[in-house]
Length: 336
Image (cartoon, rainbow, N blue to C red; front, side, top):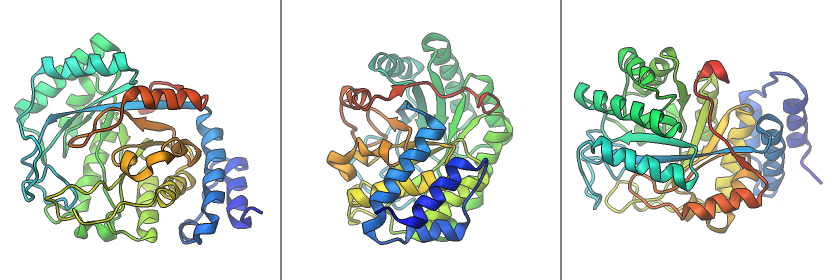
């Protein structure tokens, strides 16, 4: 028999326009014993189906500038505070980025994002990213995204004018846990970047990493912060510990716990896009197709920044087998 509390909240979300459960109710869902997790997951699929139908999107990225980041994020292989074995290099050429965009388009990705390491891009590198984004937009007609660190409003406006539709900048974790993850900048700087992107008319993409040592209440806190910021899309990552980082010894999350995280974010943000990104292969293993049942409607395909993803054909075949259909993101908030 289904858990009455979960069913009651689900029915209210499905039937009442703009109904939202309370923070306390969300925490109650998060702290339910494991025997109720499947109820939460199945109900999350009902919510996803109502608001997102059977459409999913596939996002791809390129690590266009790698390593030597000044920030001390405890999980990150690209931080200069860690000794990892990743490749480090400055911003790569427009030709190299275009080549990867063409490849991802041919492989079936609907979105392509230019990602760079570091706190903020120089004016020269920002201009280069804008020029490259314009070329990608004109030559592939893909939805072009960017994740290039901290932004102010003028920089965000340049990105928007270049044809970039979506700006990605993760909060990574709850404000109450952030100092355990990063001490080199303040949480408000990340929020300021999201606000600058929003002001420029960019679609805002922000989420975090599960499994950093945070509590279930802090996972609710992050989901709630994203709800209050009214972000358009929420990427969920799972920690894949990298040797040489401060979190290299943290264990992987269990698949059911990871799926519960996805479901919880869907309950708190029922109308938003939820994308499953880094760490899904090692965390979910044979349960990767369950991310859609748990409430996700987007999937990052291909490789990540410093770790490998699985074969894109496998992901596209998985989507097809589930009778889901890949689509492109809307190009701006005004079109959502």
